Image 1 (tube, helix red, strand yellow):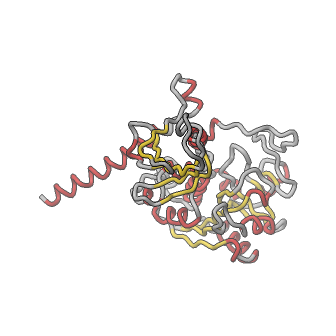
Image 2 (image 1 turned 180 degrees about the vertical axis):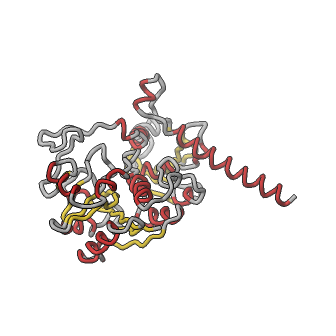
Image 3 (image 1 turned 60 degrees about the vertical axis):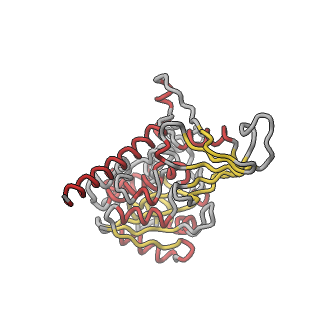
Length: 339
């Protein structure tokens, strides 16, 4: 009797997880292909409760199983048009009442647009072409301090560093604009030889414990911070050690890079500020694929490969980009991952 009960409970848990993931996938299927097939791309935000100063919204009518709430704290009094023209400070609230993220100031319409953008697959995003682009097929120009792995000089560096080409082959492009942490984690797990069922963005949220870290929608809207991505690695069976960037010397960073690129069971994932490298964007995650001793450069396997190819970065510049803080004031840093 007990075995039968446990078996039934296990099946119910699996069914709940599958339903939650399917609901999220269906809710977020708002991308150019859907529009091309005649389906609406609009994100529907439905008000579920309100007071004079606040209103709670959720996505759609049929997929409330995601149970994430967008809480508006209004910045002005109500007008004849109701909520439509009002702007508020928006918090993303989990089912347990915990605030997952502050999403800034929005109207209901502008928040719907942000959700639509965040859930657009990167395969449908074309970066603006710059006149001085060094990589025509990528579209974004590189800072002069960086060397593209696709440029002649970058290919020479790959050719003289054993394992660099193989590392590039393990790179996975992030699937959505703000899911670089998931792309970096899947690439890193692949680099250290974890099996395909683990080293996969499609399977990243399959472990039930991952939903306690963040849901797919949360990651699409706000990404993952350093403690969350470290916890995610452990859930997927890897061992980790994280170091805050502002506390790490350039020598420590260089030693970690050398150690991890020379051991197939180890990898280093870096969280860095793009602006410090002259790139478009804010914070970003990517694994390190190789190190060139002669030039003192690390090969950053940029998971936003729809914008940038892997790049060779001088250690001094990489250290400066890591020794920064994110939008919320938390320090960036590195995660040493091994199996």
